Length: 249
Image (cartoon, rainbow, N blue to C red; front, side):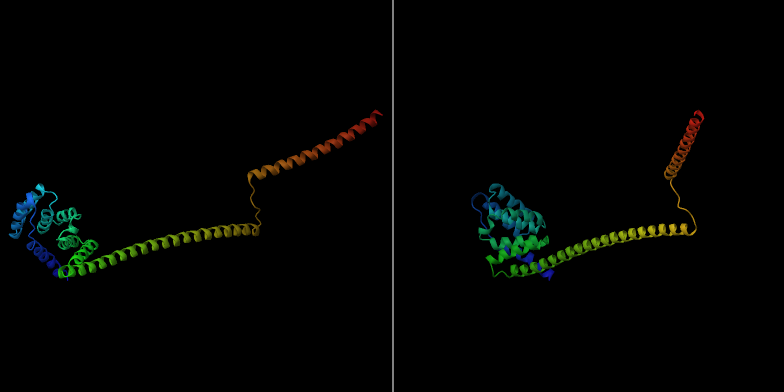
């Protein structure tokens, strides 16, 4: 299907040009006619020069611009051809050659695989010339390629979305695994502490105390001893006083 369509692109464009005997008004008329003769002789470089001369004399000449775009297309400079066609987009729709103009714009878009623009251009061509079979076949072909392109883009987007979802699920699973591991580690630590305490109690071992606790216990013992010593001293003092009184008495 691709080869016949490409063949139609070229033959249809030649048919448009061969049947185009546009006579420009006033200053550019001679250059445009000379360009047409050079184009028919397939001397495209000379034709390009002729049409550019006509545009220098009258930059608004639709005939010179349109034929220059067609010439550049034949010279395989399709990017520049597209730019020339773009400059004519304001006046082309109301020209007698609007159907051919949109057909050629569709060709440029199809060559760059801009299938949406190709479909739109061929549709405009058919609206102005419904009997153009070349435009109809190219329109159908461009719609088919556009559908394939859209399906590929959708598949790629679906693949990206699936990859993103898979990554999110993987990250979530990893987080849950880390949390489970942390909880297991905590439980193991607590169980180990409990086992150590149980073993210590079973072996008759007393739990170790900190230096601060030992110091506090020592101070408490010393305070108790001082309190006891003070009591004894007071009792001795009372006895002594009694004895003194007794003696003094």
